[in-house]
Amino acid sequence: MANTDSETGSPTQGITGEGELSNQMSTMTMEEVITATVRTMQLSPTRQQLKYSNKEIAALLPTFSGKDGEDVANWLTRVEAVQRVYAVADEIMQVIMVTKLLGAALEWYYSKVDYVTMSLSSFKVELRSMFASRPSRIALMKSMEARRWRKDEKFSTYFNDKVVLANKVNLDRADVIEYVIDGFDNSVLQSQARMKGFSTLAELQQTMNNITGADRGSARVSSEKPVVESSGSVTRSSQSNSRTALRCFNCNGLNHRSSECSKPRREKGSCYQPTSATRVSEATTSKSCSTTGLYKQCASGF
Image 1 (tube, helix red, strand yellow):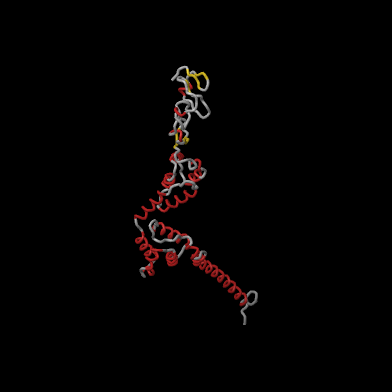
Image 2: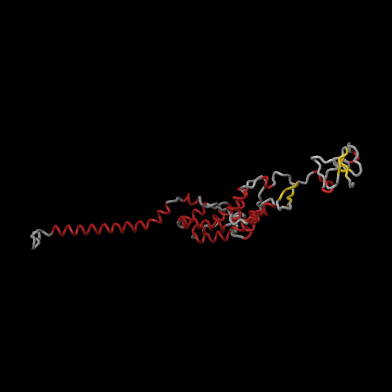
């Protein structure tokens, strides 16, 4: 027989059951929320790893063959950066590293079975000790210093190559700027670039991209030399054939002697008839001259 409330006389079993069911449902809902939250927190690193495939991670790393000029320290630094940013597990990262080995580095890995079973940290220590050497850095420095801005080459091409080589040596930005300027084939441009005082590589690149072949002098003959005028501006004067060509003492013409001159003999005390192609010296023009015939008569004579 169902229990009844002493005051109302109504059954109490149904009310008690409904209250317990309500409390039970409320408790289960809270447990479900907590369970779902914990599970999400536990699975989040795994889901982060699954966002990128091993192939995509491997594409972020260059190959390493252990040749002269390759810096194993820089390569391992990139490996560690990729692993840290993309939360790659050690065992996966080690497999990816092996897939990027070529040549002598891959032969080294195959030479010893222990490299397969050792931990990632131990594997990196072995790899570094095998291929890290001072001569490799020296070779990189020499290669970087030897890279010059070639004639008829765009500055952007030279700039990119020079910066890549400098990055392999881990130079400071200020040193990279200096080495880029050192690679110019024009001493005048070098001086102007240093006077500009570039503080960033971007400023240097933006300015030098506007330099044309004519500015560099690549379109001129190699005998041209820079000349600094009194105003401070820089021009280029060529060593023309006029410096070595014969000059006539009679008419001041080129490529013949006075004994071979076909023009009338110049009288003593006269100066040359000036033409558009003949430059009269300041000493001659300062004289008092009167034109008589082909030549000018100078009052002061010679």
